[in-house]
Image 1 (cartoon, helix red, strand yellow):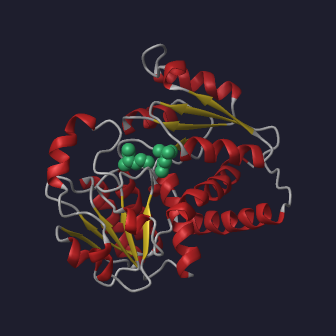
Image 2: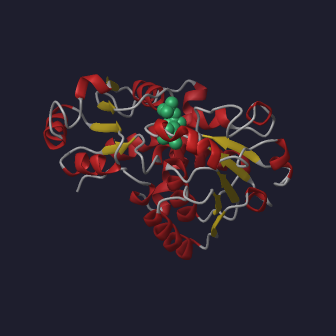
Length: 306
Ligand code: CP
Ligand code: NVA
C-alpha cells in the first residue's frame, strides 16, 4: 500500500522519531557541505490552491539538495476539480512524478487525491491539518530542549489546522499540550478524540482551556498562529473580537517558565496574535522553525521515496 502523510496520525511515534533523527543527520550533512543526493532523478509535484512562502521554498530547495526536483503548480495551472476531476488529476500525476505535495482548502479533497494516487501524497496544509509544520516544530523543540517527552506546550489562540496537527503530534510523542482557545474556536472534535486516545497510550497530558494565563503556567513552549487563516477572510471582524485577550505578549510570557521558547508557524500578523517585542525577542525560535521545515521534510521525502 502507498504511504501518504495527510495527518500526523499517519505516523507512529517510532516513525516520527526516525524522521526527526534523519532530519538532524541531513541538517548536519548540509552544514558540513557533504552531498546527500538520496533522491537523484526523483520528481515531486506540488499543487497549491493557496499562497505560500515556507512550504513552497522548503520543499523545492529540499528536493534540489536531495538531487531531485520539484514542479510548482499554481492555483491557475491545475484548477483541481474544475478543469479536471480530482481522481483524474491524481491518476495523471501518478504516471509522471514520484510524489505529490498538495496545499488545499478542503481536507476531504486531499483524502480523495490520495485515494486515487499510486504515489505518496503529502499534506502541505489543508483547513484541518498541517503535519509538515508539526514535524519541523518537533525537530525545533527537540533541538532547544534536548527532548520532547514530558515537556508542556501551550497553544494560545485559534484551534486551527496547525493546532490540530500539534495536538496529534504532541500526544503521539508524549508531550503535554494545553490548548487555550475562545469558545467557538476550539480544535476539531474528532482530532480531540484521537489526541485523547494518543495521550492515554503515551502518557501525555491534554487539556482544553479558555484562560491563557492558566494555560501558559509552567509551559516550556508557547505557540500561537494567526487569528484569521487562509480562506477565513470574510470572518475577520468577528474573529478579531473573539481573540481579544489571546495575544502572546511580554506579560503573558512572564507566567511561563523563564526558559520558555515562543513558536509561530508564520506568516505572523504582528500586533495581533503576537507582539513585535516577543516575536523578535530572545525567547522566539520562529526562524529555526522555518529552517527546520526543510530538514524535516527532506527526511520525510527520503522515508517515503528512497
Ligand atoms: N508555515 C507555513 O506553512 O508557511 P507558508 O504558508 O508560507 O508555506
Ligand atoms: N493557520 C494558518 C497557517 C498558515 C501556515 C492558515 O491556515 O492560514
